[in-house]
Length: 132
Image (cartoon, rainbow, N blue to C red; front, side, top):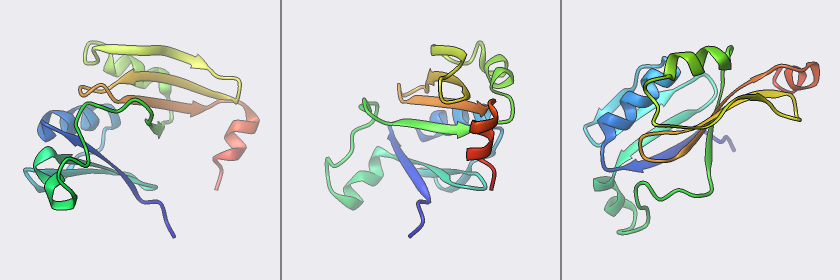
């Protein structure tokens, strides 16, 4: 089994895809106006319209209602990501901070209010965990 993606349901796919394109530097791949993906080497962030929810189960997902999941991206320079997003993010939850487990982390909210963590491993132990 492979873990391949997380999907965010939103009322505005273009707005959210545009945010993640800016934040990651990865262009969205569009399947339709109701579905886009930000594809990285290790996983995909899928962004689906509320119009797609009834295809699975009506009412199964609600946009802008996440209170437990953090979407995470490993980046080469978390401080650089912070600088590039300044002025484009409404809420930085935590400025770049080195965490006890060795990652330098930036926590923010995307336009739908989802928590997003950009991090860079900075200690030898953290770097070793992500070396493949």
